[in-house]
Image (cartoon, rainbow, N blue to C red; front, side):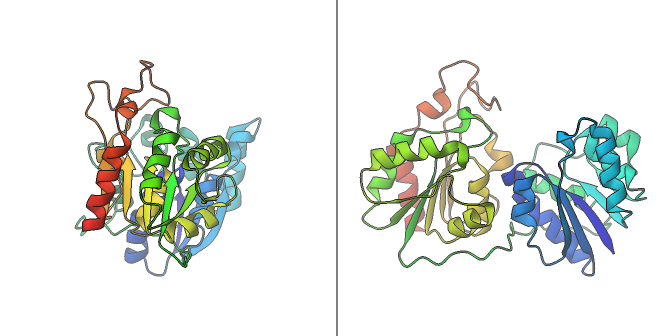
Length: 321
């Protein structure tokens, strides 16, 4: 059985789709998956043992995206089942152009017009649940038992307990806590942990600021790891302190004890999934969750009001579990 899966674009969203993929694997144990997605989502999920093909979708770069989507679909061929975790027109078109009879995507004007199965999935639940229910659209006996997040990248083994710091958040500055406060928290636990600072290519400056404020030896990996290395290093951490971000979900996949700092986003939808040693630090605000890339009011109080002391307390709570 061949199953086409269009992955979410963002790293964190792709990882939150892994329980849905594991459900598909459970219900169709002989299936071979073809993954289509962004570079980061493909790099994280291509190691699945049932993945037959993993293709980076670059149709957006084409001068004629419709034609590029059609061409990609014809290269992919027809499947027994096709599902899109992206609620986007060209994703629906890609499924339709493969001539696959059974196509699933979340209900929207384009999916209803183009595809065979378009369930209405409530957004008032964790994104993991939304993806799982979508994947199980054609399964009558689905009991809503959702598995853990799953990455098939081996975690690195460090010689000493290691604290990971992730001050980045690719989506936008509104999700980012402050470098000097991350440094203050890391310094508080530097007698017990080696410290690694994580960050993508666009977060090097923030990581460098944390390193400067920390003022003690640490490892700064910002901009120096590919996705596989990022996942392996985070998976080997003993403790992780992070903004709401893709690396936060990487840590959850490896059950790394985590303190996550939330501001403008919906923690009920995108918090760590099934990580027993996880704490959220956030302040209830009239203006949040605004879901904006930058603070629309200019004050950033949802993050500015969170102190290093609050995060330190949350870390100590985890240590006592």
